Amino acid sequence: MLISTILRAKGPEVVSIAPDATIASLLTELARHDIGAVVVARQETLIGIVSERDVVRHLHRRGSELLDAPVADIMTADVVTCTTEDTVEEISEHMTRRRFRHVPVTSGGRLVGIVSIGDLVKSRLSGLEDDRARLEAYIHGG
Ligand code: AMP
Image 1: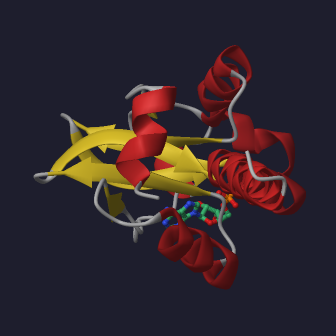
Image 2: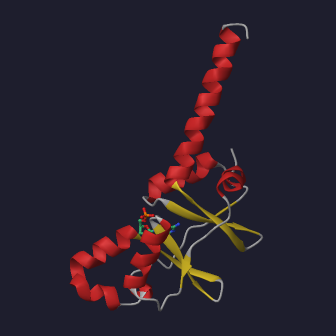
Image 3: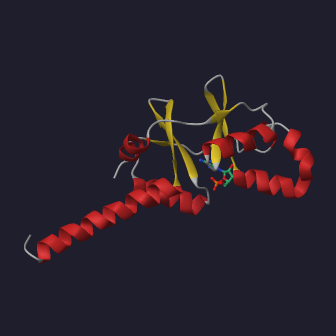
């Protein structure tokens, strides 16, 4: 299955934040949208990604003063992206090997969505369920 199939079902919305926004406002965005990561963009250019895990790690080190620091202090600048033509299997494998749960999706160099490990697991489970139903129909001569 292609990443484009997942995006068709879930839509193109990508929540982004500016690098100089505070970490307190990042937490507001994560809670408001009920998500685990946002992309960091400057004038529509992707320059990083920041997830709840970054906040937890840095909060542990710096304490509550972290809330006034800019998102740029804790984001990951070296963002791994995928394209709409990549397969769900390839991207799941990347996420597992590199230990992250979010991948922004580009098409023709433009950001067109983001997929999470939850989106990929959901689609793989529904693929397995379809296979099971097909096999059952085959066995029972349906
Ligand atoms: P996550 O599992 O998505 O909460 O992220 C775990 C760590 O990987 C955090 O330090 C994130 O900033 C980083 N991260 C998340 N997604 C990506 C990505 N697509 N490319 C590079 N780093 C990422």
